[in-house]
Length: 350
Ligand SMILES: *Cc1c(COP(=O)(O)O)cnc(C)c1O
Image 1 (cartoon, rainbow, N blue to C red):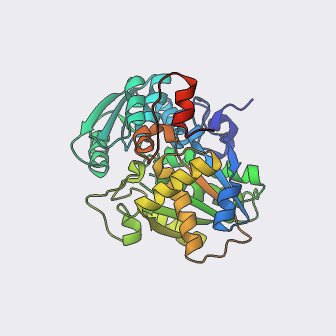
Image 2 (cartoon, rainbow, N blue to C red):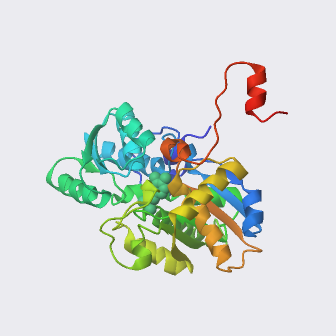
Image 3 (cartoon, rainbow, N blue to C red):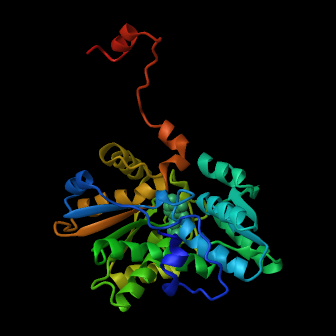
């Protein structure tokens, strides 16, 4: 029986005899073929890594389980994070389950409804900051320096250690690394963690190849692409609405060492990919997740030769996190009274 990333990848994680092997069932997420999208972009094989299938609905659980295990091992009683939503949901869940008080600081009015609901129901202390994510991160870093409370943002190195296990899973499932890995970039921890995972597995002889790392920022929140901090990042993809990524340098190293690229995708392209994933493949990812698919379409448009490429797009979080974006999509719900004739008429007749 699969028992979570700590047990499954125990020998590749920085654990000791004293680390509790806790789990909420994170990891071991599906890798699903996306044949229609593959045909449209013209690549040989396309797979979606469904990280929304983690216990709190995003990849953040992979890193959080390691960070929380190490906090418990160190005797910590409290954890804190800044969050665009998913880190707070994950911290709140693992904190609740494993006996830590959890404090989360989120940008007021800028967090998707499902994520806020999770932080509340798991019993975290929630502070809505009159500011953005970057300011929230700055404040919780200072809080953790001044007080006896463990910071569980991705500046905590255990987060990236846990998140690298997704790269291991890809190689375990595919038998080798993909040719291209397409991934959304916000605080830039995940792209860095995948690259670390791919390199470690390659060095251990578990794969023959390394992927090119293709990261995608939202156009209104693209500090790495533009080479400057963005003071007021803006995008519909709230999970990547970040103007000063904590793992900026690591992400640039992942890009350069792998021969990859980091590009910007527009909100329109993100929403188009969001719709296509759902309507052509039956996969409901949150908007930030769709940046990876939007990015792949962009690479195809730019003329990249994908004909023989095996590509993985990381679908970082569940679409259910952000119902408001879905409900704003153009759609035609017709109302009808409860009788057959009226419903036939509303459908335009059979
Ligand atoms: C956190 C998050 C991202 C961005 O990951 P980073 O490690 O911050 O670059 C993308 N998508 C979702 C759904 C997330 O929760």
